Length: 150
View 1: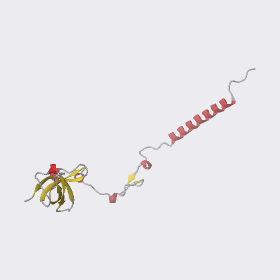
View 2: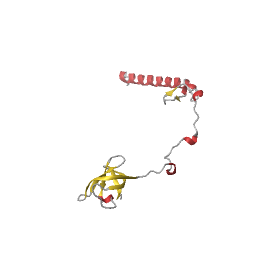
View 3: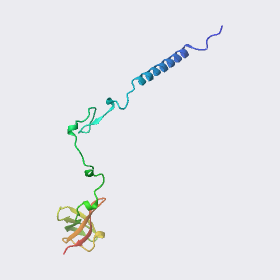
View 4: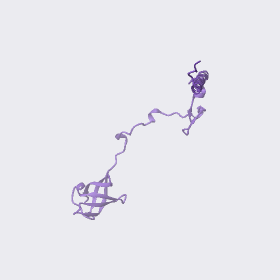
């Protein structure tokens, strides 16, 4: 008489697999029975005035009407902006002609602004009153288009 080809461990593994498959099928059937539709009231979420997600709808009495033309999505056009005078006035506080740079003290803000000889339209010296424009460089504000004011 021959022995069975199945061992005890093999039968146990097969039984576990069959049990898991049966449980999975039961869960699947249960999920089909409890399926909620997207139109059901419990599937709605609302955002309150503080930006929190809530399950209660907002009060229609507190609703605020917004005019669509008042919403600006892009940068305002240049024609809507008021013109800005970019020229500033100041005094040359330090200038080294050998090195080709110096500093200008802005008359309005009292800031010290770096000035290089390549950005000057004419030669300047310490104490000269000048007119200039400010440009942001990688090291900070820098004076450009520097001219002496008479």
